[in-house]
Image (cartoon, rainbow, N blue to C red):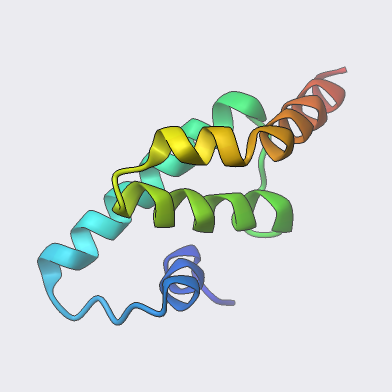
Length: 90
């Protein structure tokens, strides 16, 4: 099975050759997971394709210093993820 880090790396067309770059990207992935888990705490990071797609794009925006733009541009997807989280709680 492909790791989450590998999926993000391929999405960004990134080789992460330096350890510093790899650490920064892994930090963005962890931050993105925490951010998205606020909308839907029950995300299965191995199989939830919607959440994985959002995470990949979160990392792209975070790496550019534009998380605020991510929130604006993905508002409808975040809302849908939030609704999914509410549905799973019931």
